[in-house]
Length: 205
Image (cartoon, rainbow, N blue to C red; front, side, top):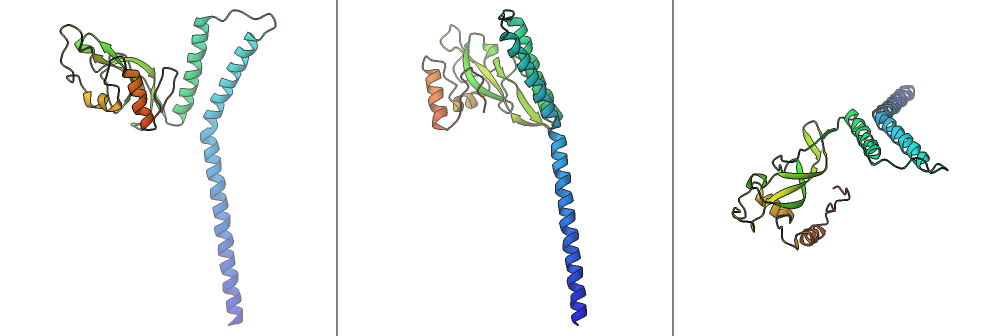
């Protein structure tokens, strides 16, 4: 009996050792997969770092360098944004853009401001776009930040308030008013809900 118990203990210890080894190998594989998944992000950050350092060195040159060209700066910033979007695409996150004039879609657009418009056809449409959106597998991860047109009811021949599409959505966001206190009222409502409003400086939620 004693010898049998010893053998059972040995088998149990062997099984535990095998389980521990398999668990360790599984953890090592998962870490390797995670590192491989993050490699595109690292590569994009390397490029962004190099671009920023080159531009910084050029502007900080002893002779002052060339006067910054607004067009060249715009191209540089666009390239930086494209590099980031490319890195996200490698992780399965796709960028989607919104064109001004598109109909406001509450499932894909986040209204950050309202602009009074005189044409009824522009009521409830995107006037300007402040940031692109991102989605993965058809699921929106971050809505595009847009400024939505609201028909100016004070103008001649304007339609009654509340006739445009998605009117309830805009009213609930606190962006439905276009009077002089609209901006302050919107910020006040957002602060009460603990949200961050876009002030035109690129703030996103």
